[in-house]
Amino acid sequence: MGGFTEKQEALVNSSYEAFKANIPKHSVVFYTSILEKAPVAKTLFSFLANGVDPNNPNLTGHAEKLFALTRDSAVQLRAKGAVVADAALGSIHAQKGVTDPQFAVVKEAVLKTIKEAVGDKWSDELSNAWEVAYDELAAAIKKAYA
Ligand code: HEM
Figure 1: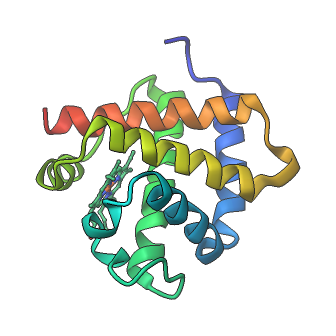
Figure 2: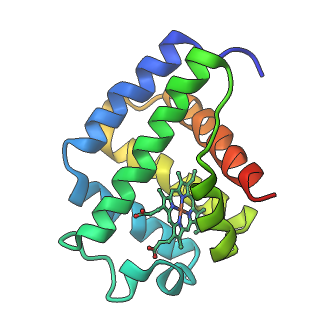
Figure 3: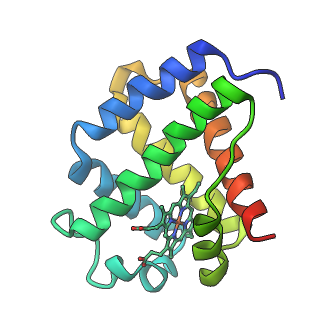
């Protein structure tokens, strides 16, 4: 992989702030997109048992963590050229038996959510920066339970 650039890091950082500006709203976009493509998520995520409720702090908390970790992944890529995931993060996903196609569904949902959050600032370059940060983080999580 070519190095993750300062510009890519800045794109991820600024769009993460757009996500953070309204976490309940963006969480609805995120989980609705996941459920459309993978209805099994309703039973996988404990906080989706009663549907996509933006007032459920477990639901918004999980979305915030996932987006924040992806942002941190961009920061790590820029600073060190590699991403390390916490072993605990590996074991949660190993226990839940999360598969590669499920990682792809969540990736599409992340991109869709960021696209809505940034509006006309969306670009291929911005999309690509999130994709690289997400893919490297997903690989690090999977490595932690391989
Ligand atoms: C880079 C991608 C991902 C990141 C950064 C991530 C992050 C996390 C974090 C931080 C937790 C702990 C939740 C908490 O403490 O509230 C968690 C739990 C969980 N993750 Fe992920 N995750 C990712 C991908 C996925 C995927 C693809 C799936 C499967 C669809 C998945 C399914 C789960 C489930 C089922 C839990 C337990 C949630 C619960 O019911 O409490 N994750 N994830």
